Image (cartoon, rainbow, N blue to C red):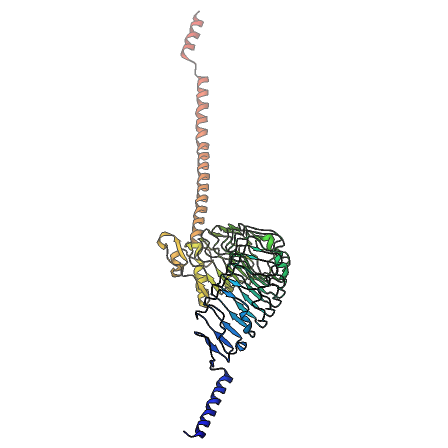
Length: 514
């Protein structure tokens, strides 16, 4: 090969390499630690599942690495060896069995903004563990063995937005544990062992908007539990042991709280007074509690509520009239409540914005005709209920047909009959009007019921007339019989007077002879 050709090919190859590097379509490998993948143009060193026990140090130009992924190895300890990766912005050491982090291990990682240490064995964090991470934005220490958060543990995180402590064994949070988290937006404390809200500790996270306490052992919300967190928009306290919510538990959140999840707790009543000031609340979940009755005005003053969950309330037996009265409610879930047999005809009164309703899998056997704004609904699920398919239920067919014609999402195939016997378990949607044994007249009322009433009226009238006739006949008969009897009586009296007894005549004749 001529030297000119070789130079020409070299130039072409160089141009191709530069072209790919420019558009980022090819990852150019450099000298790399064993079992790792290095992509210099991306600044990525990926040593996932590479059987590493220490931080890799046999790499060209570690200062150019911006992303270091070490998940799935056996690195038990972090120390100052990390200093060589001073340009890191992303560090993932997930699932390593990590036990210890020496103080100041991150001192030279001032550019780091994401640190993932999920699924390790960390049990202690000191106030110097994270020294140097002044630009960190996201920290994930979930699924570790932490039990206590000490004062100033997170003091070096002025820019931290998200802190994930899910799945630890945290039962105690010191009053100043969150000191320094001036910008914190989201705090995840899911599945720990907290029994109370660490109100004092939360005073240092004044910009907090999302708080997740799901899966702890919290049993009592005291007054002013979130008083120092006036920007909280979303609180999740689902799956706790919550039995009592004091009237002013959410004081301070009147203008901020938009979503509240109290699912899977032990509340026996709707905490109406505690909700009274939450005028900005738009989503509320009270499912899987011990609530037996949804009383009138249970959600009074929740004027902006749009989504309400009342599912899996195994003790719920009835919903009273005017229970909701929520003018902005769009989505209502009242499903899987096996003891719910009765809904007051006006329970869902004054819900002009209602579009989506789930009433499936309850024990409801009769749906009042006007209890829902049928014309406005876009989605309705009545499946899993067994109703009385009598005259009072025939109107459902009209609703089914009307909504089906408008192509609305109306789930009713599993709405079945529980009576009468010849319709048992048949889907209501498969029935014909004649199956209900109702004959509608032009007047619009049920002739069967009308005829029963008419028969009763006629029988009553006939009975009254018959009684009058009998009484009149008796009176008339008496009027005819009484004069004859009276005449006979008078005749006998006159006869007795005019007739002289024979013995009296004999005595009279004897006296005369004498």
